[in-house]
Length: 325
Image 1 (cartoon, helix red, strand yellow):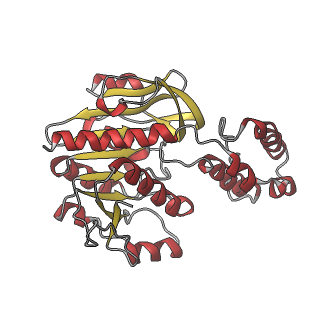
Image 2 (spheres, one colour; image 1 turned 45 degrees about the horizontal axis):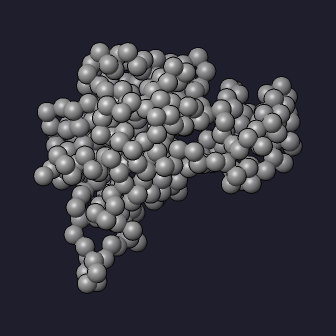
């Protein structure tokens, strides 16, 4: 394990062959803004990709979360015990910054409760970090802050595993297949053409779901925007659906969730689609929902994008090394 957590109650150590603490090649701030239900899984997913991408280099990771993101007692306690204050990113800038997506609450991104924190974070980071990797809502925030591009609300949530084309015009896509699968899960988008007009290179895209990954080099920092979710594990989309469908059946939300496209193994799709149709037409059919084997089906879901995700992070670190020498 080459990813070493800093400021935690149970640090993970990376030891040199002599048994001493190995020096870190990179420092990384991970800002985890995901909702409570996905908070710990998201942390694990990003740490796994950092570990896969960094090779033998040691990465010291400091975890943060914006105070404006609504939290329950359990996750708030975890943040208080294991995470560091946001202002540490400004006072002790890392080499790398990762900002996760978050659950959109407001129609206008500028009305999100943590918007002021997001603006300060990204503006400062653009001046002080070597590279930032921004996911989903954080990517849309960067486009708003840096380029005055507004996200557009989708009529239907875009959720599922979609085929996307890879453009080999950038070191980030070296070694990645020409056509890949990539999960998406979002209610908003920024049109592909607008990114090109403001100097971003579109690295992964499709006609069906728009861009997945884009990048731009600025004077001080490289910016990598990811509208998809390469960090997801095979059952992430199914877990999201289970959570939202359960809330719908318990009358905690009025909107029926969208069934994620190709989120399970092919042999499991028909039964899942049938169950979804039933609860869509009968909100009192919770017995069928409760009986559905979500855990077993999730365990069988294929991980079609894992190689692509690991290669993307390897390329990210390779690029960092080449520009720092």
